[in-house]
Figure 1: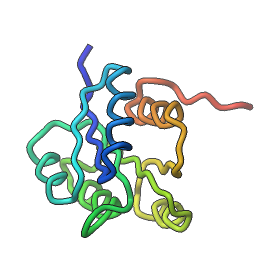
Figure 2: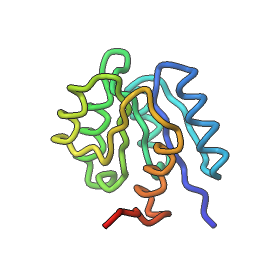
Figure 3: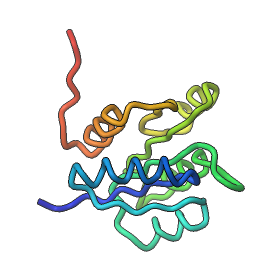
Figure 4: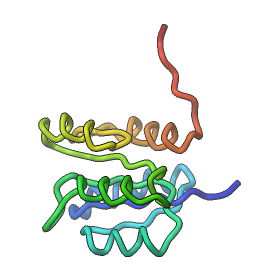
Length: 128
């Protein structure tokens, strides 16, 4: 099985570490960055399968990460999950092509489930 690589972008080290630990327990390779410029360099120089980004980052934010990825022909199919503590961000993110949005505080199991669904590793189960 090919290990998928997830980029976690968050300037709060404890949150990034918690997400990273959970992803690693699920078998993912994880890269952590804390700002836009470093993240763009990693995205350009690594094979990233999925991105989890906080909305609020130093100097810029997760919305800019989404715009960068979705407006790049090579990267546009890379899923981006935004994590936010602000309700208004959830409304805005749906209009900028984020693949999913998770509100803080978030349930780690739900975040991992969203990762699996966006990587098409688990079928989305819905109640009928």
